[in-house]
Length: 221
View 1 (tube, rainbow, N blue to C red):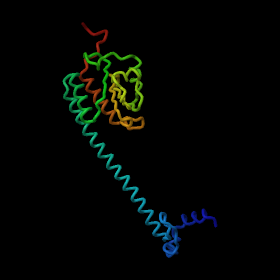
View 2 (cartoon, helix red, strand yellow; view 1 turned 30 degrees about the vertical axis):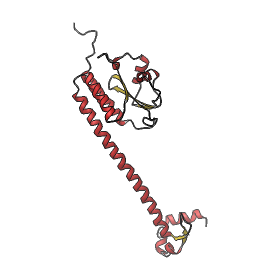
View 3 (cartoon, rainbow, N blue to C red; view 1 turned 90 degrees about the vertical axis):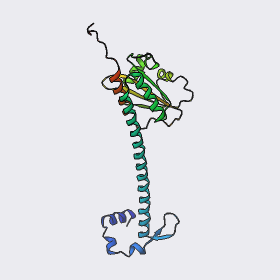
View 4 (spheres, one colour; view 1 turned 90 degrees about the horizontal axis):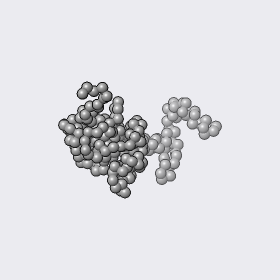
């Protein structure tokens, strides 16, 4: 019989070792590490230990991810509370920068708001190319690339290595939030963007509440 036939037979007839239980201890096979001969039962125990060790590692990783997500959720909740408390656009932007710097350790950030509602850099004109770039974002984008015009909003970029662009929009686009880091792995293309998207939604909600209404041609004078 070929070895494949034997393997198929044993897989199809698990009662074989019930009929010949002595084979579990009498048949000797090589130890996977030191080469000495051990029984089938001992080898199975080693395999189970390896599987348990792998499961423990995965469980530890899941616990770590869960704890990290809890911390991020708490920080986002603080951002939400402070944004809700803001009475005007200036206060909203000030508290946003403070939260990003202190809670998330992101000192490099830039905001552009399309609708003129203040005198700061946040309301400086943006080209149609940038606006179209933001409009076409289905979700936040991360990586080493940033729109060339948007890149200039940071001033000196010689030390910046990674970026995140977060569109501030729901049924319409209000602007964009840009984050930057000297660490090339802080914002990388394959990273999850769920929390960045939630941050964008919180800021968008705050802007909708505080931005002046859009004037229409038929507005009464």
